Length: 474
Image 1: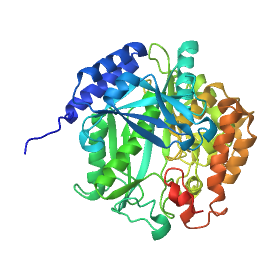
Image 2: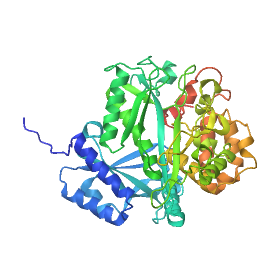
Image 3: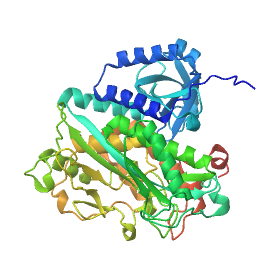
Image 4: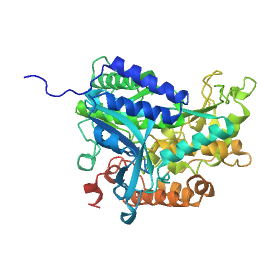
């Protein structure tokens, strides 16, 4: 029988070339109007594309996707609306309508075997009914902050993340945890150990290929310390693209795992007794001519005054911003000093228990590594809190001399967050209140004391796991 559908399906080599070309346009800061014109023209001419997937993130960091028929989108791309009251933390039912504006600089060609044939992806900006930026769209807030820093100071904000996850047996293992009470390892080899062809290695290899095709520019991948744990690293990008890639990394991992009848899990501590999942966030600032402004060959650890000021401001606000970097009940299990947990409010070149570490680097690669970030945090909120605090926050006296600790439970983190004047300045009182209320609602559904084993509610009502049916059964 002849093939009736003629959908776009590109080789991984073609995909990589196209996505790296799009990435270069962002690096070169090509005017968005020109990029938009090119993308719309391409969609018009490429008849094999049937739909455009528009992605955006809610206040807690969950990725949402809407597929628009290409012909409809070409006619209505300046008038895409959706129901904001259906998105947790967005709008009330009485003021539900919001708009999406395609950010054409964040356009991706995706592998057909993972995302479906005939589709391309683009991230969207969330707008109010009148077209103004929506204040709970943290991606839009981050993008504006990054643009302002470039306009005022010539700064380009750079980031890359080391995102750890677990691969568990069975589809939807997290959603079923309240029934099973356990996760199934698919590999118990540990750090760097996985035989070619075993489930963990096959998963890592497959995800890495998808990432390459989507222009991630991979660096290394390997099993991590804990059983069935993985990490797949890629290179630096500007701060908004870096946050987008965190969202896509997790999406790709989940898609690939599901296709293999497994689950990619980014809970910070899904299993007690082994190392948890972190998302070490490496950041630096460069000038318009590409110079790394964190580098000073004469400075201690080769760090510039700007890098040291950046570090001290984050340490000073460590407790205030902790809830944005560790946003779930489960995240506070990871901040356990017995498993290399970065729970000390200090900076060090060697101590991996420090909130901030200074990795060995040269003029190109020297950076500040914020180690206390959990992989279930909103990536845009992580980047905004780290960069805005590092560049504009206040420094406490003798902050490097303190040996304090980050909160070890979400209630203490919530209290520090609600009381913080800096968080009010960073987010605004409206968004701050909405976020705190969401975190409080999840916390109140879980036992107050973490105890010695993972409780079903901290998974069942987790912001990346819950579904409406389970949430309403409380």
